[in-house]
Image (cartoon, rainbow, N blue to C red; front, side, top):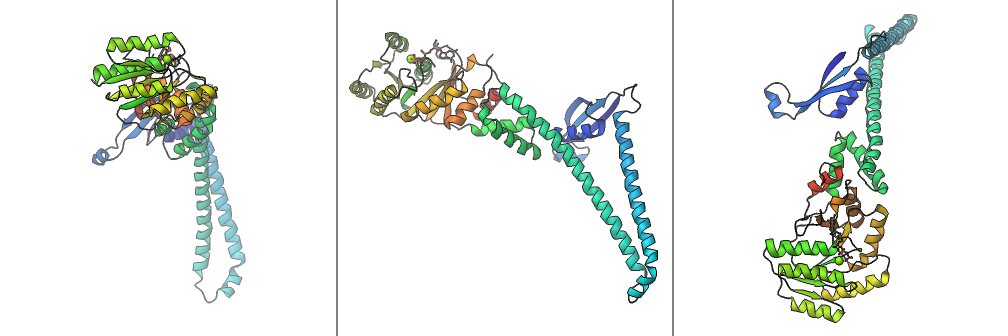
Amino acid sequence: MIIKRYLVSNMNEALTRIRYELGKDAIIISQRKVRKAGFKGLFSGKLIEVTAAIENSSDSKKSNIKKQEDSFEDSLASIKKLMENTTKDYNIEDSNNKQQDKKVNSSLNKNEPKESLKNTKQDTIYKEVNEMKELLNKVIENTSKDEEVNTLKEKLDDIDIDEEFHDEIMEKVKHDLYEGIDEEESLRKIFENTFLDFKEEIKGKIVLVGPTGVGKTTTIAKLAGKLALVDKKSVGLITVDTYRIGAIEQLKTYAEIMNIPFKVVITIKEMEAAIESMKDCDVVLIDTTGRSSKNTMQISELRAFIEKANPDNVNMVISATTKNKDIISILKGYESLGYDSIIITKLDETTAYGSLYNIMKRSNKAIKFVTTGQNVPNDIKTLNKEEIARFILGEETLC
Ligand SMILES: Nc1nc2c(ncn2[C@@H]2O[C@H](COP(=O)(O)OP(=O)(O)OP(=O)(O)O)[C@@H](O)[C@H]2O)c(=O)[nH]1
Ligand SMILES: [Mg+2]
């Protein structure tokens, strides 16, 4: 077993050196962050000490390292030979031309041209060898980076990132790898930067729209509970959920339990009256019936109600379990309602949170809340950009 220790500034550098020196079968035994030795180390950035090992196979005559040393020595020997030949050629050439040189350079110092020509030839060879070495190192380094980018595609699939965004993400990660930023940090940066901050206080008239069964009414009940019971705000509830009696009963029951005003709206005129009756409330939460995003008639009808309410904020409610293709058509179908933020529900019903990224990318709107279960009022929360990235990366789960 050959064990080697490397002091490097990042894992990419370690992997490149290990692969180059110990071969591709080498394994990493340990890694830890260390500071440079001595007093100066206290003020410098951390380095990584990586220990790698390779089996010293008894069958093979030479270990990988020996093979590499041999081939390195071979290369050196060839270069040396090349240099000797070149120098020899030069000497023969030089002696042949000696007489002629004497004549041509009669006005110059006799030793100077010979020495300087010899040095120039040697310098050129050294320079070329160094360039070759640099090129070789780059090729080794780039090969390992390309391999990393290829495995990234599988990872993006695993966390449910829409395939349409893969190329863009991989391009960014590849760029970051060349800058010395590792894959995980690069992804984190991409996911965090997609998040739009939403610090606005919840107040005024707030409408929730979205497809059938995504959890609009449950989310309204959760918000009403938090605002009325925890934040002690005066809250009013309005529903334009006119199609099914059951849906009205659902919110009415919550309103009765929380002792807050509740109005059912069937016509545009009633919407005007309901809003007027709740004008003293800090927050008025307006629930709507789920509509098919493809039914433009229903969407236009809903728009008329929303326009009459003149809301401060329209939230598009969408479930985290929505298929990637449907996300596009839903967001597009509801566009005419002028939603300005997003609520993502049923985060508890999925284990891969790529839909958070897909929805953020497709809508370019802030995610105001996420809901994480059926319990009213507890299963609702706000996320910041760091938390969003941790969810998408799979570092944080609700399971
Ligand atoms: N697992 C889970 N279930 C939820 C969540 N939010 C709501 N639900 C459930 O989803 C179902 C539908 O919720 P509703 O609030 O009635 O959905 P809606 O959007 O109002 O539906 P329509 O009024 O028919 O458009 C209910 O069984 C809820 O308990 C959540 O965050 N997680
Ligand atoms: Mg409902």
